Amino acid sequence: MTTPTPARTNNTAVRASEFVSTVFSLCEDPGKRAALRSGLGRPLDRCHRMHQVIAARVPPGSQNSERAYYAVAAMIAALPPQARSTVVREAPEVPGPAGSAPDGASEDGAESTGNGTALRRNFGQCLAEGVEHGVLRESAAEARLSLLTRQSVDGVHRHLPATVRVLADRSSAVDWAQLLVDLCRWDRHRDQITRRWLQSFYRTRSAAERQAAEQADRAEHDEPDAE
Image (cartoon, rainbow, N blue to C red):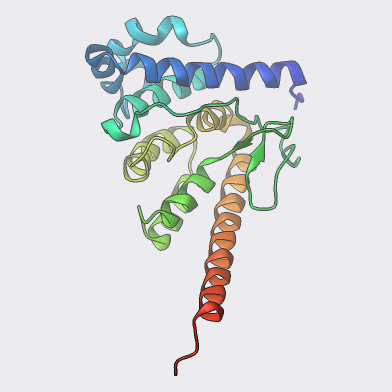
């Protein structure tokens, strides 16, 4: 397996981030948003209305890569208004070769951009944060994550929109650029990507539970003794 060069890795991340920003801007036009939304859950060959809006903005590549770009655009277009508000979007981390640890991975599962200035959030972490925000129960999040991490390319594209629809209640709920990078590489690096999603989910949940327990202990300690 060929190891991605730093330049190619960085270009992939930057393209993904720029594309996501472009799609959010396009969705401000109701007609373009409707065209993009029309491809939700559809195979690439049935996304006819999307081509006029984004074909020129999708970098040339494999069919799996193009499918990932179209899928992310359709999912963004299908978001409710409150989840399409402007958010800060930085370049995502691109996984290295299968079996290697991601550069800059932190103990709680978040990933750095490589320069130590920004943290990326893969879909496992986003699901864990959804549990913390009360968007879905932990058991439901685990079930959805377990289902997604067992899927082929066709399967992940089939099941992902339903999970996004439940999770994306706010603009920061999903790290779209990181999700796009992972989908582009799903066919070749699925095992590594799914491992990182699972690790991030459980590390993030563990950190949240630990923080909640510490806060409860402090609150109990700070309570005045009853007279």
